[in-house]
Image 1 (cartoon, one colour):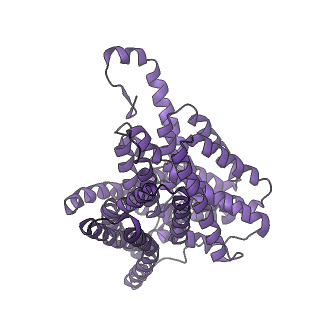
Image 2 (tube, helix red, strand yellow):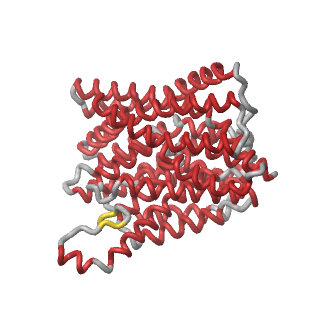
Image 3 (cartoon, helix red, strand yellow):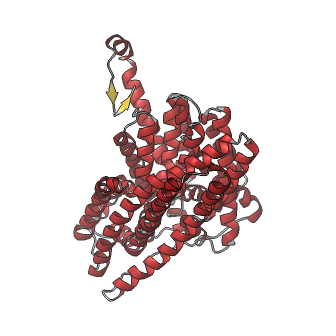
Length: 501
């Protein structure tokens, strides 16, 4: 395991470094950032690098084996009711432990926090079961996606508008750094019980199906609750030199506590199944627990870095850029920020590794990363547009999901599942703690209502990568179609946009 740590450090460095360089360039040349805040950001960047490296290593040695071993054990019992009940309980528990869900719930003062979290958890648990049913009974992925989103959009007609952005944002934040590796590995573990690589890859798409649940459950809640008020959490001001150690220590305390609350349910689930069903060897169990230690410290250090130096700077940069003398650079900078910052999401490294592995290298890591980066970049530009003109979120979300579903009839089934999974992976910690505050700062500078201008940003970040991956896949397939006859004769591989056909 430790032999892989050097590789993880390299991967994390090349993921974090572009973000740090671009943000520092913005702070030095376009925005007047106080020295203490700049120093705190630099310290936070180091924490991000260390935390992401440890988390990625721990996810490989703990989270993925846990998900696959539990899935394998449940499948061998041949009791579908037990499998589905376990999926519902696991989906519910993992969701309510996600710190991003709690952060979103804190922004809804007119609603009971725990009611909202429970409703989202029920949605994820229900769709977790639905995703497993799809794998077991070989239901087409696009059928589930098409029916699921049609139902959600129909419910929009009857639900107050204040719930629209809230429902889609809830969907984006449910797929966090810990839940994505677990859900994805569980689905792959179920499909791995089959004989062929093609069937094994059908485990992709489970995270995407789980993301439908929160949309539907929150919209159903809106039928009974009525209008809600939302209060985005904005930065309270810049730091002083004396406050730097205090701010970082407070972030460490909060992140270590939230990470413990996030991991404890997963550890409990693993132990229950270990003693009752899967019964791994002592060596494998010890390796998993060492991996969990890496996951715990990695995600804790990462969260401490993000919370202590990124949110405040994101709000300041957005506000100063939109309202300052360099406002004409706002949209290009937003595109650049969106392009690089998705690479700093902890779950991204795990996701692209699994995509490359289970697709038998048909989809390269580079292709998936570029597609997701383009999607987030475009989504942030659209989010700035909404912040400036207070445009309804549905004017963007409806066409994006509609086009994505239409492209799913043209693309391969594996690409469809991966593209919809990529949306959930993209809308993680960095989106909630840097990009959302950035858009909130822009909304403040433009004098827009943050509820109308900034809320819904996470939903955009979760939807645009889906369309980007689908579009690049369709372009690659179309570009190679006229060469198919020649390809069969020469028996050579044509590689377009790093997608193999």
